[in-house]
Length: 241
Image (cartoon, rainbow, N blue to C red; front, side, top):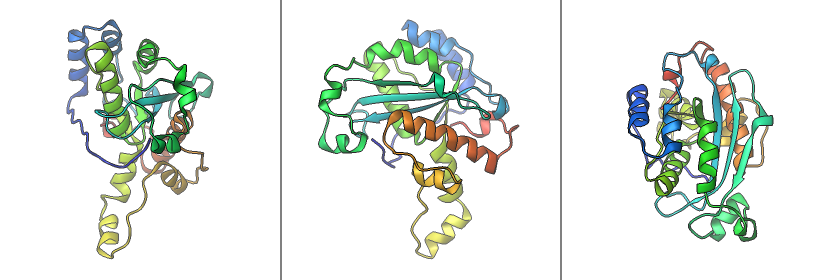
C-alpha cells in the first residue's frame, strides 16, 4: 500500500563503515551473510553498479501497526533489466487485512490463507539483495517494513543504503527553485508518485499496487532518470540515501 508520508528517516553518512560493523556484530546467519557480502563502494560509477528494484505491498503505512503482504524484486543494471530473474512472494501478514488495503493491492483473504509467513522468505530474499544496491520508489515503506519484519523474526534488523527514485523526483520537482516558485504562485505541487513520475519520461503507465509490476516500473524509472539528469559515470554515492 503506497502513501507519501515521510515519517521514518535514516541518515547514514558512511554506509561502508556501517555495513562492515553490522557484518561483524550480526548474530543471525542470514543477516550476517547479507552484511558480509561486499556492497559497491560510494565512488563506483552508477553504470557499473548491480542493482535490484524492490517493492512491497502492505496492510497499511506504519510498520509498527501493519505488515507486509507481498514482495516483488527485479535485478537490473543501468543498461539492462533481467525480468527472467524476477521474484515475487505473497506472504501471510501478521496483522489482518483491511478493506482499504485490499482495495489498494487486490490481495484477498483467500490468497493469504495458505501463504507462508515472511520468515520463510528471509533466507531466500536477503541473498538476492546482498551485494546489490536496492532501488525503491519511496524508501519510507520498503526500508522500515523490511527492517521491522526481519527484526521480529531474527532478533536484529537490516538497514542498508537504497536509491529512492521518489527522492530523485522530489529534489527536482518539490525542492527546486522552480518548485518553490510554483508554490508561491499558488499552484499545486507536481506529483512524484510512481506513474506520474514515469509519465514525465515518456514511460508507459502500468497497473499499480502490484509488488512485482511496481518493482519493474521502478527499475525503468531509475534508468530514465539517470539518462535524463545524470551521467553513467555518476558515483553511486551521489544517488544513494
